[in-house]
Length: 530
Image: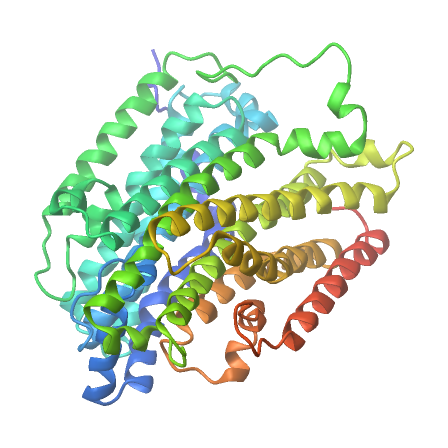
């Protein structure tokens, strides 16, 4: 009787050779976080007075705590690096592991590749083991490269080795989560959506606990929260890594137990049979909606929850003003009054919500190209459907998915914040959200343009979203020049409650949005299909 993992080693070697180019950009992106933190900190904050001001501003801004976690000692290089790159690095390492596991397990069953492998001398668990092994290797690669890149800038190796281990541990933990998702779902899209939803929910929960001043036990309520308890810049606690290892082993045990019992090509959640007639999918517009329906509903539900979290956080700045107005003004330099300061903080939350919403639209565009690569677009265009019409169906769904998700979040934020503080009105929040909408759509339009005209460079769609986040949320903290901050479309969104609001930059954003959308249509019409 052959071993259940027979053929694991050659399959892992072949998968590593084939898939290395896919996770190499992830390793580079994550490694840049701590390395750039060291370089930027020394360059922008060379004096103790500037570092103290940074520490006060960051430590009291709940929006930053939501994303990066509670700031520790920001007076040292290692303290700043750990604050800026730990939570985000763990998130991206987890995301990388999820995509690797699903692509090499569930997706291979969808494509029929797994059946070809199974026809040879290969054990039943070999494919899942190879997928998890590939994610584990990539996670180790992230930790190693980030460690070497960061100490090259003069960081303390003892602190950076703990920070780098958090990336590796996060990748391992969510490789286990992805393995379970690949067994539960019946197709790769559903598996990715399930695992990413779990990751996103845990990340937001961790941020909410820290930003809202929840009880201390909540620090241990999420896996990424465990990683923050390692405290690389000070205590360097290695105990959370044992918890991460236990979590990984338990999730993998569950995944392999389910894998050994389920039918080949099926999942615990069976796909629903299609309708006897075309109904929604009888035209290209309905087909685009149906293909993305699960993602659309998930994002809209997520933004209800996100709106509740952001709405609750909006009262934090009001409380801060009451306790220390002088310090609070560091969070929004130039505010004319306390109400103005509160609303400026709200614009930051809305910009952050817009960046998150843009991810949903970019995802729809990228999935459209994935269908093209898989050969599912050719039969559609072979009929009466023209290229512009097909491209329009994907673009409209991408814009509406992100736009409606964002507006749902804006409405919930406005209602919740207006109910909790008299300094904000739901109508004003909605007006500011509508002004922010074109800036968010620019990120979706850029992905649409790149995929339409030059899909080999489609990574630019994701990188633009990351860049917008860095410039919008972190740019003002680093005192970057206006021309650099202006690269982000959110920089040009006016504050609608201001008496002297300037809409010149806003109209430029609208023009860029129209231009990028046009480029996407023209490019797709002229290029060959993948």
